[in-house]
Picture 1 (cartoon, rainbow, N blue to C red):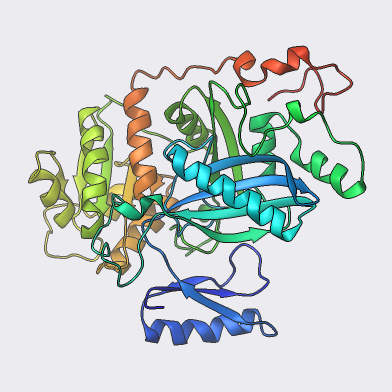
Picture 2: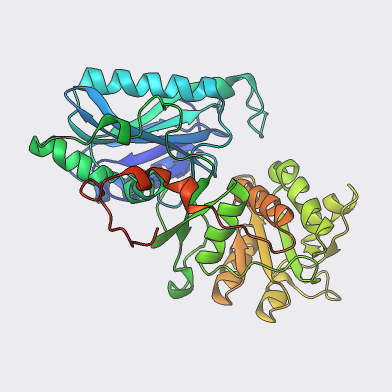
Length: 416
């Protein structure tokens, strides 16, 4: 298989004791933990695909045929637990070819398994594996981005079903219950189809689900995303585009997003392999009027490419006594947003943890994922004047006007 590998205990919830292991020493150490979590069942060790997008299909089937289905895409690359990922509905970055391949796979899986009831199928799109000729690529811009692979098929309703139901106006749980109980199903025209028909919701809007975390209440926990679930809640928002919906969702999680043009300070620190991903959004923040400060290598990289950035010391660095440390600036509330993008190759593990932990402890907005950093910078740029437009309710659920009250699964005055 080759390293890195993903270790997955059997029959656990929320990715408990899952971990990416990058060498034999780490694998042996974690296997001792994993076997204690699931003592009676196998521990699965599988190849870990890096740099891949993740696509999910939530649906309901009856006798091996799909009754309703909706696709949604993760903002973060694969490697972040689906419960911690931000979701885009409908998918925003995947090609029609990729979506067609995934939908054909769903149809075949449902048929072969003769599924009756709810299902959730997760896909990897693109990515690279150890030993591949694209192993040195880091941004996903290689030929294999058109590859579509199944991660898993779950014969149950997933945690994203409430989000999908709200975004499409169709109660997937009700449809699944009707299938299992042998009750009549809603008219096919009212259900989102596996291969979307013209005019099928969602139209003219994008829905975004953003996770909520409780790291401030969990002393010592590392506020970084990974394959083991950490979120304790979620919010969903609508917008006319993904930037608007994403910004609304972040604000709804109580993240204190700094104001463009106000001179607020943003701390940026990223590992060398992620520099090319961080350069663009860092420039966007500078262009919006934010003051950038960064740890030594980050600040040097940005300045060398025309992005002004002052240098601050790492928390454990005593060689730059004339500058305040990153954690001191966070404690003094002089920083409004902390961006800490770490990678397996990162050398300053303790320092990076201290930056993330201090931001969480003092209620500072924190970003630890490069794809989230890119989308946040794009959202702030698009709505730099603070104009977050409200999506027109008639665009969201225009068919409500034509739907008899006896068929509606929500009340006429219910808030969406």
